[in-house]
Image (cartoon, protein in one colour):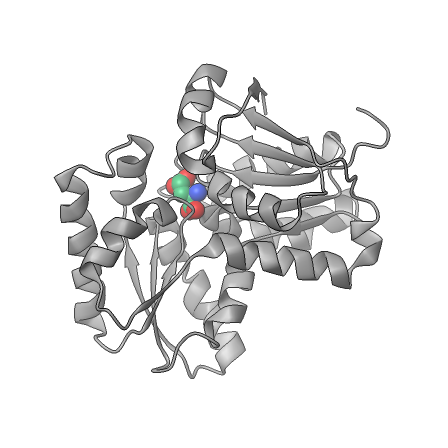
Length: 276
Ligand code: DGL
């Protein structure tokens, strides 16, 4: 490990977190980053708490061992199921000066400025939806005043991962889940895409939602929140190195990662394999 190399770690179960990384790098181009995708064990969305926690903990520890002082869990499922335990149990024992942040809290903090009806819809993996992380966090910031309706969309990640976004089958599943959501609460005016893959489905989603509905994408919100966090915590920002570099690590085949990742990042990249 280079002594002065302290990148910000960005972790996801696979490719999806690249959509978040893209926004973060646009907002904070001066920082160094390491992206780690656990492609060998993706998807996390249908896995149990214990497994998601253990896999996420391993990835976070790996990133710390590579010099990261701060790790972003750019995965909703990991943020929902592992973040709190890592923050409350692991970090105090391992090294209380290190930081791990998730994507749910920053998204929730902004939601009150978007909704006019006070009715919000959340789309996510089965794991994120069953964890109730979004309704619980939204209840905290709104004193229970914002009504949250959720819909798990288990088919959406595999459709994106398999590059089937333009397939009519994708229209079918997106339409089905959106219809379920709005049937359960027609007053929804704000929709949270609570999964890293869903921004890629935005053109399809927009075909099926009412015109007045605002779709809330996480990338720019998480990037703005991280920028604000680093401004408010100069003691953390000072520890992060700033050479404008980015390394990409995957637990799966480098070839596969390099060929698919550009769909999510919007540009080509060179990856390295890593074992957790
Ligand atoms: N990255 C995950 C999320 O945001 C989706 C992919 C998966 O299920 O692992 O929830």
